[in-house]
Image (cartoon, rainbow, N blue to C red; front, side, top):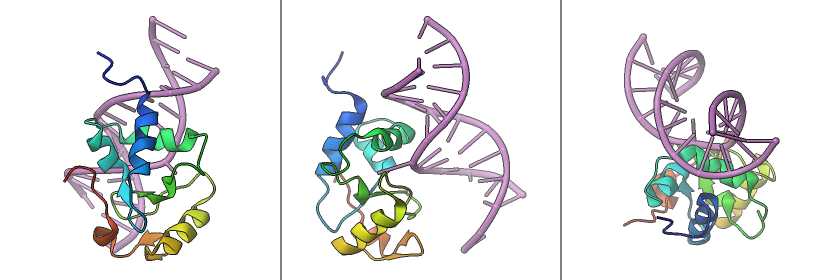
Length: 105
DNA sequence: GGCGTGACCCCAT
DNA sequence: TATGGGGCCACGC
């Protein structure tokens, strides 16, 4: 029953591309969007992603409001988020609920 | 074919 | 509020 031809990690990338600018999402929400609890697999997919420039993986943060990590560097991720309009302080997102983007409404 | 690891999350103290 | 421990899934070797 392969509903999709793409791998799990590919689906994560597709979801990331659906995230509007100035918004962020969490690994847990992505996993939920895929109907799974593989929060870990989602992060692994980002870490192994081959095209960080094609995928806005910098818009993905942890559920506790922390920035998490980034392939190009956490600092770079924070810079990008701030550049997008997301307020970040001490590696933590301010107004997290406000910039939080949900796939399933 | 099986095992370890990871850009995690949740709960308890 | 901060810290520690356990559990979850998919991928790579």
